[in-house]
Amino acid sequence: MHPLISRWSDEQFWRKLCPHLSISTDGDGDSCTSTSDVQPKYYEQKERQELLDRLIDDGYALLDEPCSDVLREKVGKAISDLELQHSIPATFALLFDETWQLAAESKQLLLQKQNKGILQSHGKMRFNFDMLAWHIDPRRKQVGFSPHRDRQPDTLDALKQSFYSDGQAKYITHWIALADANPNNSCLYVIPKQFDPGYLEGDDPPESSTDESKTDSENNTDGSSSDSGSFSDPLSRALPTKQSYQNIRALPRKEGESIIFTHRILHWGSAGNPRASNLHPRVAISFVYSDVDYEAPYLTNFSMDDDKLPPFSLRLLLVCSQLLIYYQRFDNLTTQHLRACYEYCKLHADELNHAYRKKVFVEFVKAMKERRDGVEDDDDQAALLQDKEGSTNDNDGDDSDDEEAMLEAMLENSDQFDDDFDDEYYDSDDCGKHKSKRARIG
Image (tube, rainbow, N blue to C red; front, side):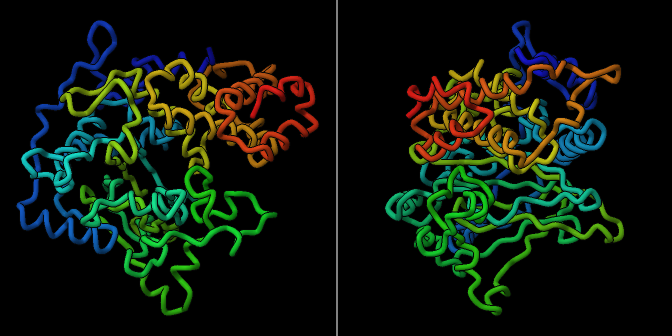
């Protein structure tokens, strides 16, 4: 077992890092804190319909009803403390009860029964467990995600099937500002649906504008290869003229306010202005809701419908999985973190939805390949989450272990890799010793 896993699995370690937060457990180490005491919040029927209409017409809607001040302050402080004091990715805030209580509050607002939730009209939307936290500080040259769509269906028919007949999307993100978010410290920007031809029509096929000499991440608008590998630049299509840039909308939010937006809207986080006065980091968290037939919840044996918070082991599993899925987005992830995340996900693989699990392992292989090829090199970086007295592990033999871990993930998910990827891996000089296993792939 990777040494970092022992550290991450120690609840006391996290309690010491964020003593103002809680990790409630019973004797078996499972969370016993109920979400039933979360105070229901909802909009009146007329307001709900107006918000839903905006979501359908524009691809997003602004929610001015603030989240709980207590939860906002606690979770926001945890994210800041993890990032600034301990150099730990913000998404580790998912380990604490208060983050899940905030998620339960979000769920009450969007999926409350008796049709009081904004997204409840179709009855098939569920809490998806696609969760992320951000701490963006322009003074540290940190920026938000680059322009992207959250989901890119493979075909035009699949794209149409990702909406209900009334136009409501089957995948919705709830993005909550835990501190003021504005152009100075980075807020979300969007291109509204009506100004984006690819929103409903799909994006141009790669042969029209893709440069085969570039990597997938260079050809894709969002810089990732997980969902948009078969489409080319939708951003330039939505912004063909100088005048079209005036359609871009900034979405500043005060602390506690939020945004809901669909899987198809082009959106990104700005870079901020490091010279602005009274500047503070942009702190935010997001939760996703999806139709169970479009994208099933990521966890197979746990549901947010049970008024319970997930056990600590599942929280850590989700953190590790999300860090692998979105590895390109975080600049404080070392190879040691990636390997520990993969090992933990492998240990608890049965708890993950099959499709999501395969995606996690595929992204791990891509991440390790990038590190091996020198896209990022953390050989000289100290491993995070270490004691002041010294490192948590000895790096001797890590290169060999990394190669074996990457091979193992490729073998388990061989149908996700094309021949070009396999050939590139096995033709590389440093992988000659593994050629005997080539026949087992593909």
